Length: 302
Image (tube, rainbow, N blue to C red; front, side, top):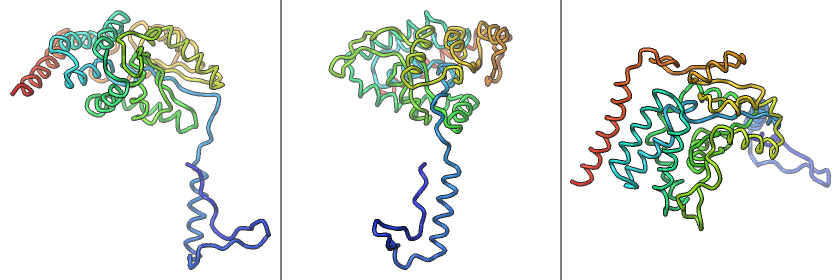
């Protein structure tokens, strides 16, 4: 926020007093000046060379954002009950064993095939609805608080995720963050082709994208921070001066301990190493999603 102009008479070019608002009480003028001073004192100057980069899936949001998007697309009849069953099973594996490149790539490729022929503006609009319906209550409060902390000291905050960039930008906007780096789906004349434009934003690709952004924005990576749950993001975490493992998988936890990186675990009811978590929990999740989707499908038919 920018401080307002101080109340009271000011000098013009001819050095004559400029008229103030007529009949404005002196106490109101003093109050306005005091408010402006407080506002100015609370304004945080931008820190131009430092920023923070947050992975999304299992880091700032519980589960895979692409899965939540898939559920939203299903509700809008982009695909079938069999497709959502596959998504549910993949999400169950994601929650149990953490991020897996093969699973993420398969989900991403399938989602891209479903949006082929749809417009960029349509996906962005659906992404806004899906965030409000399915994603908002999946945000980890602890991770979100870390993102806000960076903003409050004047640093910019970007999401870096395999999720389609249009949806990633919606998430960033809803959370009040600076922006997002995400997977770019090819589109022609504003309509998706069903193919990627380049590589999926994952693993080493994240580090490359952040380095390019740092060069563009004049960021000092030694002053920047990065947050992720997955060993796949070790290239990104190793790129910055202040890495932090959030809800880490087994591989990342081991690396964080070896490198003396910060570790924050905001999960409840299960350990990072998944001790005591029955596979039935994942099966229940998959079954629950399928049953719920089937119920929605039946209601539409009647």
